[in-house]
Length: 533
Image 1: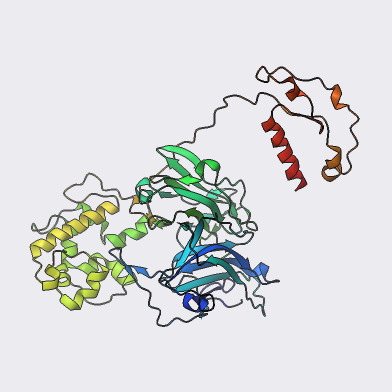
Image 2 (image 1 turned 45 degrees about the vertical axis):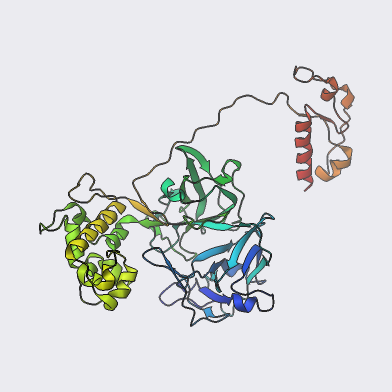
């Protein structure tokens, strides 16, 4: 547990382990191709190591999503069952299907009898990530903590899913928090209605999970529907790092609807550090984090994994020169400067994409060279599908005129994605302020509708008056209570409510409780039961 990643904080080891469903199922009668449903799980934390465990997560390895939105398989030629990755702050490539998230104080989940979380079905590999926190670098600490997964080979009719909100979890994802503040919030991540329209049906929310570090104050995912603020999905008055359990949603929000708008925010108390310092955002325990998860059903394939992004830092990956969207070309044959730059130099146009993502350090090439390059540029075309799709790339016969038209279309789409119009339309030259990965949109400066306060429409017809404690319960509830010598029969009946026709309903019962209605009597009995518990 003292191992840390090179060049990172050694007090925060992240260690991953691969698990092979083919091996796990060998003794249990299933294969990687079978549909298995997880119906529950619980952590197995090694006794004595509780102070070192920060979190435990489990992911499926679904492969990769390419530039066209398609899926490519996972290269597992180097993988083996129980393979340990000792430096694993970032999840291994292709393993991003989070379906178990446990942190300190969280109780095991309980799924409805007709619901289970699907795994298998051709996805062979699972990866478990353990995050340890060893601030004093204690030596000789060995850990064998893990998970017990409960599963069924007889699939239940409904598949569950996990919706994640990564508002501020990765180093540099959001600006540092100022120190010396009793309540400072992250920038809000908005999930707009055109994103959730991808859901095929209403979603039933089973529970909501909030995760921050030691300075966490509270979190909220506010839901708007048809322009009305419905409030937070889960009410949290004060976040407690040691009790990070999942909670059922507020009753009004146990259903999410296609077209709902959501806004995720975290609040922190940074008063423990000086006002002239900052608290960084990041994965390590001594930084801060804003992460939420919603466990729901039925499982969706679209719009369930959201991540906040800085728009200004992302735009260069989409349009190399933001101003080119709004400027005229230098040659009349083109419709805009953006089209001209893309046509003449693809790697230059997508400079950060080619350099930081593709790792390309070769010579520049034009869009005609890329589209008519045959096998030589086939890999680039697969990564970046911007060439005409009428078959001319296969015969290497795409004309310059056709390619210019496609370049103009790519520019129109990319420029609109960041919030500006494409020349000669210069009606909007101000880009968006932020973006949400996982949604097909960036965000303007956004705000929430004001939440309307509840209006009092009336009151209960009659109050409940406590005039005694049941003798059989008095020792359990109040051991030192003095006996009540008042004769319940001396109490005057209350017949003032014209809605109660039975005068006996107003008489005290044998427990010494004056009951105004069966509902209220039951409520009091329920309260006694809770006190006993």
